[in-house]
Image (cartoon, rainbow, N blue to C red; front, side, top):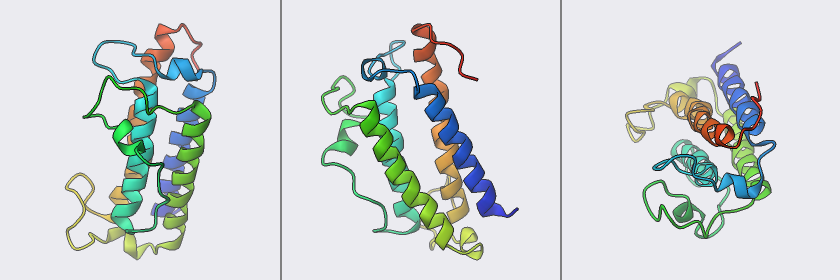
Length: 162
């Protein structure tokens, strides 16, 4: 097993976790704010989709699928925090997530193991200074947010998923 296999496994575990937590939630439940100051799952999902695209663009500019117009701004974790007008349905989020994840996995398939150590001439952020770090963040980042989905599940008295 090599580093690309480990990254694939991290992405797979993250996908399983996100999908397990979302499985029995409705579109309305994705918009629920479980505690003051916490973002609803809808905004977090949008943020994850935007980040997935960003990770790919960091490694291979111009290669990630485009997002719908206004999607990034509607899901910013810094702007318009009370505005939910740009939220999508669960099915739309999952389709966009799959599109971005599939593109990122295709990128992982086509780069070489040696390319994983590349720093892109120092243009990558300090929290992910190599291509390997950026690609690994795809799984780690979504797991971090998925942990926040549990607050919504608990508030709704949903069953423990695993």
